[in-house]
Image (cartoon, rainbow, N blue to C red):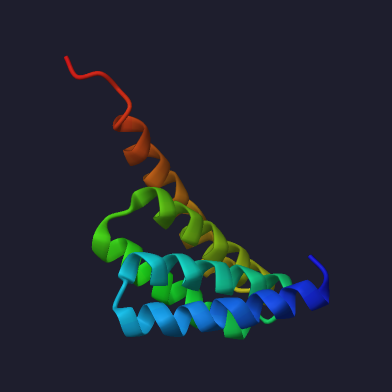
Length: 111
């Protein structure tokens, strides 16, 4: 994505973030927060991305959406890796596999 497109995305995500926050729509707020964090990462604005990713993480952990939680773990892992915090990056990277294992058990037949 070009710098101009990223800036445009940030503008739209910011507006959506405020709207969903006012509506108290946690599912949409988590999704928008994650996307906002990812775009900020793409722009190299890692410190700004972190609060959005952490907000998304908190919501997905609370509502139990493991599939989306895996995506947030991945984004957090990449964010910490880019900042040079390899211990935190590895910790979140390992969490991706926990989500994958749990999600994969949902598709297995019982018995």
